[in-house]
Image 1 (cartoon, rainbow, N blue to C red):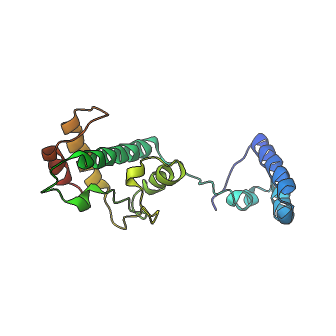
Image 2: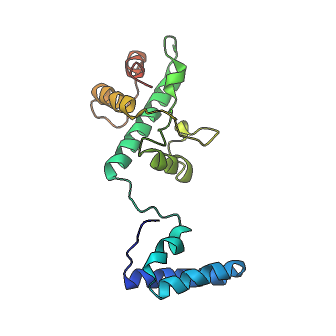
Image 3: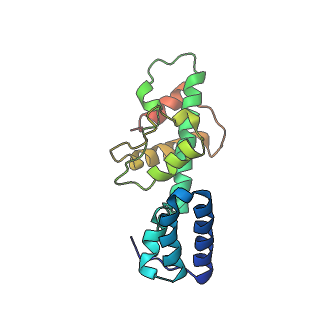
Length: 175
């Protein structure tokens, strides 16, 4: 765990929180006690361990990654809705209309995408039964190419349906 700096006020908030949790969950009182003790006494080396159970990541997901993730999921919403609205679906690769996810080892987008899809229950058309959005291969460059084509087709309009030719054009660069 990386070193964590906490102000007195932040430590006090965590101590109060663990005190409340101790009352709500007496079966785990000892676990909360050592955390309270470490935070109350300012044992800085123990902050990471004490707060580790909270699953707070030490790095934020950049705003640019969040926006790009939303843009990609929105694009797949338009793809899915457009495909569903077509009467003639010939010449369209059905496999390419589905969101593939992001590479969990190489791309920063997976965590935020999973949060949007599973925790926030957004972009339902991109959810899958396995609740697994790790593509296990790098796809972000393909998505970025798709976003360029998508932007050219839609001219920046947020709510847009693609006709068959536009859909085929976009899916040519899909992973």
